[in-house]
Length: 287
Ligand SMILES: Nc1ncnc2c1ncn2[C@@H]1O[C@H](COP(=O)(O)OP(=O)(O)OP(=O)(O)O)[C@@H](O)[C@H]1O
Ligand SMILES: [Mg+2]
Image (cartoon, rainbow, N blue to C red; front, side, top):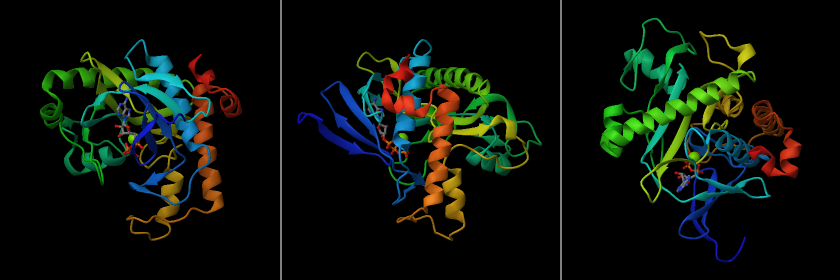
């Protein structure tokens, strides 16, 4: 990296560098966080899977929604992006009842103010995908909020645009993935505003970190589903009696290998590109 590059931040997974006033370099590390704690063990190539899949989706959705991607770097883990003013909400879309959505539904019959039919089971498909925003907690856990609360944070008109955009993106990717054997149960976007005031898709898109990917052939409502994300790591952590505060546990080799294999499998199923080919030439996901 050139000496004019300035490190401007570290997320749980990404390192952010400013290339100039208008451009950022987003470098995805191999760090894995579970229950919002970054674990001491890395998953080799995880950052490349996230970067490759995000770039893949950015290239395929740019006619639906503008996005921040400018270039993918030869390391396969760094994206040159437009620097945006990020909206202070997480834009979540759910097509199925899982995670905090299932928890909220069981407690109240609603998810983020969306009333849902009675009698739904865990992992059931929703009558229609719903937009369920969350706060962006600087530390700790994101919290679901109603659309009214989200409108207070970003403005009512902007929120309508954000909701429509999020639902459009989800609809496209869910249909695309379903044809390739993956159900996208839910997903999270981060959107930003460019200098001209336009809404732009940023961060990562439809990765196993930002989404619940379920193998379609094993789908069976009424229970939690196996998934291509950190579930394997979470399940292992649950066996330890760890209190889910920092520091997290080291992961044994077989959990590392199993997790890496799931990330790579999700990449190959969705992008239909052998992962080794991506490592040779990351731009292959843009074509
Ligand atoms: N185009 C962009 N302009 C400005 N900031 C961006 C842009 N794209 C992404 N970001 C920000 O970069 C950061 C990405 O880092 P990372 O994903 O590691 O952080 P995190 O969101 O805190 O962690 P996690 O994803 O595990 O919750 C986020 O804070 C995101 O809001
Ligand atoms: Mg993030």
